[in-house]
Amino acid sequence: MAAAVVLAAVLVPAAHANGPGGGVCGTGDVLVTICAQDNSGSSGSSGSSGGTPAEAAPAAAGDESEAPTDKCSYDRVDPPPPAGHQAWRGHDPADGSVYKVVCDSDRGGVVFLPNGQNAPAAPTIDPELVARKAAASMRLEPPKVASPRAAGTYVVGMPMWMWATPSATTFGPATATATAGGVTVTATAKVTRVRWAMGDGTTVTCRGPGTPYRQSRGKAMSPDCGHLYEQPSYKQPGGRFKGTATATWTVTWTAPALNDGGTLTETRTTPFTAAVHEVQVVN
View 1 (cartoon, rainbow, N blue to C red):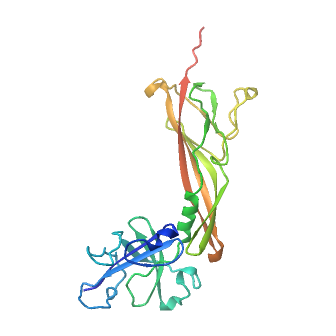
View 2: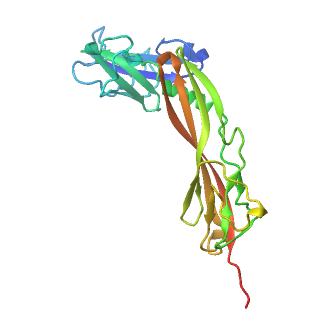
View 3: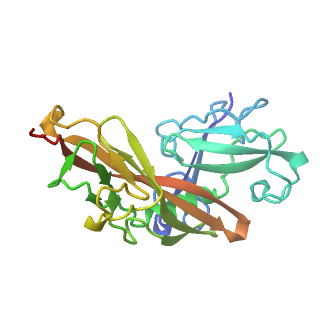
């Protein structure tokens, strides 16, 4: 029978590289553990024959090279990366294929497997995973809603101005770097939009923090982030509309050594309430 192989690749502090577990290889911030159990009774078995690499199974309990039970699957990248891409690790595309490794714990990367070889190999560094590590180190906070105010009272049919108080931690830009396995990624994050769910079934998307209202603006609509309630809030639970302001942080990252880069997003949400009343007119 074919050998059962488990591979776990995870970004961890370098101090963990000598921890307990199966065979450990790799340097820096990457820990790669490979454990194999040969159920055929013969030595040297390294994987199944023929076909596409399938989901790896955990090593049997008691195996002296026992690894974490994190299961990983291997999917061939189709279409393949262009020749010369870092994923080929210097190999000729005619000599094999590139596979994407995805584990149950969301860890993963990419590997090159020669033609005819189906046993998992240690994944190369996925720069996007390093970029996410950099983003996780940043202080990306939700919007600090200034209006609508919880203590304010608003009127049906009157323009409401929404805005949040901007700061480096609530709108950016914020920059951080992370390194894994010799790959250094620089990431910059900033808020690119705020989606206001107003609690009355409508949403408003604003491209910035919004403009603070001043009495000199009278009944004018906000130039960049406003709403007009058409119904009072007295029928809502607590007599108030319950809304949220969700900021989308766009993280732009670059990995110069790999001539690679891209973007990813994070979201942060702040709840708010608005008491909206009708104006009573006396004849």
